[in-house]
Amino acid sequence: MEEDIVNANARWKMPPEGVIKINVHSFFSDLQLPNGNQSGIWVVCRNNRGDILRILGGSLCIENRRNNEYNAFMESLKVAFVRGYSNIILETDHLDAYWDWIHSAIIGAPTQHARIVQQLNQRKTDKNFHTVTRLVAPEDNVLAAYVAQHGAENWKHMVRIRRPFGRIMEIWNSDMGLGEIGPQFEVLLEEEINIGIAQGEVEDPQVDQEGDDTGSSGESNDLGHEEPEDLDLMDANLVMQE
Image (cartoon, rainbow, N blue to C red; front, side, top):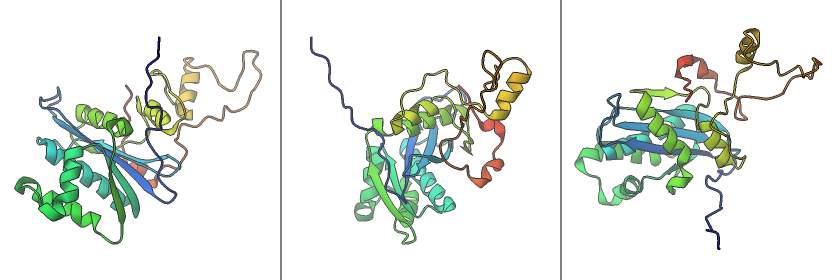
């Protein structure tokens, strides 16, 4: 019996050196979620190594699907401006919103969306920034899509995530071609391990079964980059664990 053949090409493609790729997704539900939200936005910024530089998202409590998609674009451009990213690729899987924005300079925009589309065009034409916008397939935007729904389900404001949580670690590794990680995988900070050791809940990773010192495990909880200096602005309780 013949086996099914599926696309085995890379999903997320790394940008050229010196370019920041921003993946953005807007989640919208026709019915209110348990917390009263209907919408969520998420922005993921990565460099040419694939390192996550910034994860920003949550919800602006917008009740219009298209307006939420436009605001997702706007939030990504805000991140680029604030962080000083001058050479960016903006990727989204929202076909209709992307198409309307790209052609708005020629055919205009609906009255209810005219103001934000005008602002998007102003940012895109700023000569201090080089912005390329791309439409990608949903399977090329899974990280932003996952966290956009998470943002809608958990927050009613925009937040910056200090460190990966839940399936982000699994999806990020898969995007990078570094393998799949099981759902129970969790990255711990060194101080968290030390607390667990003191409470007898975690075995000391530096001591083997015979009690001989094996040295530091050398594992790191980061994603291969230095964390931004302003991370102390975020409350630790924003770190979510599924």
